[in-house]
Image (cartoon, rainbow, N blue to C red; front, side, top):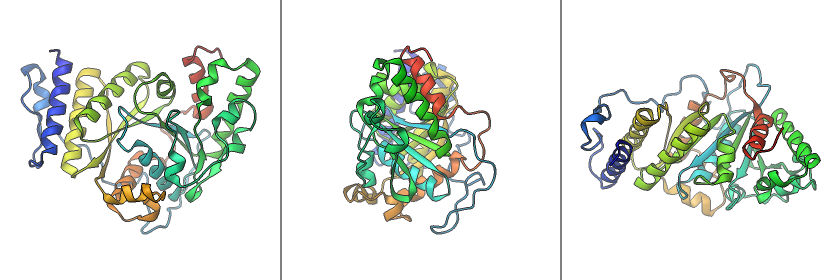
Length: 343
């Protein structure tokens, strides 16, 4: 068995052990080969994720902090993805967008799960237009922006983006040009991708500058998250890669999953994965989905909402980006190259 496979198996075994109800006070990787000895070090400092360090501090209660400072010339574009379905990726994208908006950011969320676009369902809205109407010239991009709860602007998904390679040149250029409007309308653009590594998902992951990978403590979710990190690290090595652990039974369980993924990613891929935080298992979440009312709005003090707020604080979007950013128009240019289209 290869070193990489042994590492993944150990990672999955650890998660299975954690889920069995055993203590998580001193999580460690189970027995591993000698050449992976660095992964045994449970004394390595844990990644801090709950602390609010001033980058994105929220006011008490429901009030928003006054976010001063210069605005970005381009929107910061972040893709939210997962290795497998069913890990709560779309629910996380929805509630993160609302949390950022509550703190004063202008947020656009794009539902890019082209097979099962349902972000608008969780939001409790029904946009009349989607990306297909823009792709085929029936509507301008600004016409399909639908205002959802909290002022978040929603771009409903559709199969239209997959047709980018098939458009004639004037239509394609008009579409990409229209995308530049988004940079002036938002501070942050969240892209909720599909799960897995289909060509459509990769088109977004290879084009964005920031990627959040969502996983759960389930062994298959961890292994698939690692596969996603591996592919992205090869295809888009300059991207900022971050991790969120959803549906964790405890902070220790989430930290154990994150530590193993971070260690193995650095060991085998030379990737420094940033742990943004975790969202605890919370019955409020399923009730919110059934009621089509995002939990950060309907139950803002619930455990899941607190988890999302901590993650938003870690993102640091209240400060200007540390370097130049290409914005959404830059993303569309890179997507054209992914599909083999000359700019």
